[in-house]
Length: 114
Image (cartoon, rainbow, N blue to C red; front, side, top):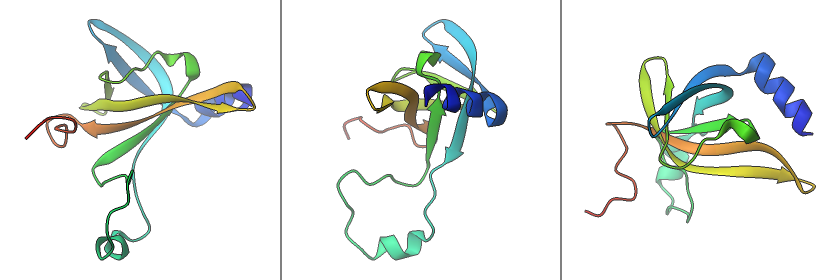
């Protein structure tokens, strides 16, 4: 399964720059805005615990890409703060890494005290 995901990333992914402390590297991943079919239908309901809010981006990358919480992903001249990074497992095999990001300077106050 991991080999299949790696082939998909290589063929259909996009190049991102990963900035970890003073080091930079390029990796191939999927990166897109978090969307729902209709945000309006959700707004009239109470928020669920763990709900993903607007303004966030999903990162799907290689297991060995080295992305960690607090790192910066750079794409199209924009910097994104990696808020969360975890490895997805299938049948005890690490398959890919996923994460949630926000654009730096726009919605990056998550986890700060007001």
